[in-house]
Length: 102
Image (cartoon, rainbow, N blue to C red):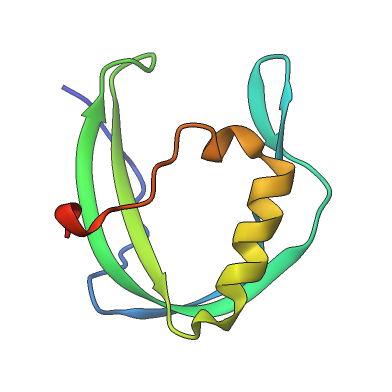
């Protein structure tokens, strides 16, 4: 079994302020690390909270993932544009949803 000793405690439909989020990463010795680039701040709401055990990591790590949704979507095109130019591999295999997927 896995263990965890920290839970940020955010619950679904709770509001949070995200300050200076970086969407710029580079690989250093095979690991993704934050690199220089623009920072974004925005209000968001917790839309999902999931718990799982990642058996691929050493010592079977128990993870809590918290998904956020931006409340004011005006920054999204700027963030997407930045990600496309700074981390192009994110979009290499991306296929936009079709009407059949909805």
